[in-house]
Image 1: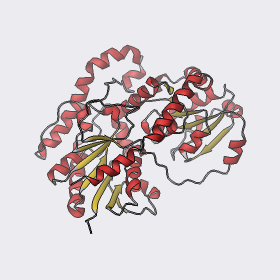
Image 2: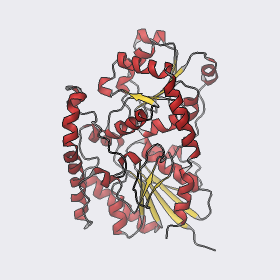
Image 3: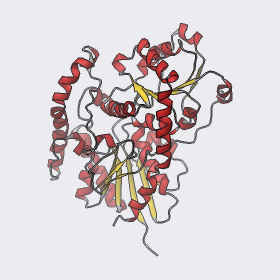
Length: 409
């Protein structure tokens, strides 16, 4: 009997997306007796892993709040001491389990650890971060963009972006040097795609990477959702004749936009479904006068794709974790991005005509209302997303992932 290949997944705790994608891939091969699967994730995600048919372990990670704070301030995502601790933890796991391959999502220590332990590694990343994808310059929300209009800062940012990227990579190169690992080119895209294999959580028709080498492959959108009981208002919501707007800002979206967003929605003939994603919603999020005008269905978590299918629009933070399930459901999106990753995925959404984006700094009730009206009442958005939905459903990248695992030495 052939030896089972041991696959180790490391799910970083930065945002929910970095947990969801490894779980989706692990689930996709869990029934295959050729593989022994081990998945390590932060303890706060443990409730989603009960009853899994593979081995589960705790991965100690930096709090997600610290990760988001570093993004907001333009700092390196992980401080050097954190990265050094990560390398030590990675190496201990690799030595203990002796995997045939380690697969990480935003685990920037992994390329160092795997080289030191002489174990192949693969990194999961969105294709818009690929050096082979069309270059898009995304000015993130910064303290300066709240004072100076982003349109005025755009040309300055595009000119300075290579310097900003270089600073982030230089920070990582200093850590790599301490472990005797060669430096990376001063390009952030090279940092995010540094691995023996690169797994794009995308479909090529949506985000092509012409010229990418054979060790770069697509594994689909990695759609996954935990089993969630429907709220007691579900049937009542389905019977509600008004179009639905589904708000899901995820674990990293700007909840501070909710007052302006709900004020905008109160002007439209719609009902609102709000998923809080387990986050505390500010008490002032629903202005009293607005609340009286809205039919509002609220829950902590909801079955995302199914809820999106019953909605006319999904309002999201613009990151792939919110966009892709909505597109798969055939529902256009209003994105309200803040960080660079969210801006990049929003740009691709807009390029395909499947939705619109409003920067978080510019998310006034007037602008949000205008964008929502366009998406709801202009047929082109629904037509574009219906076309993309078909592609997303046909392109089962996880099948390619299974074939990829079978050829790992």
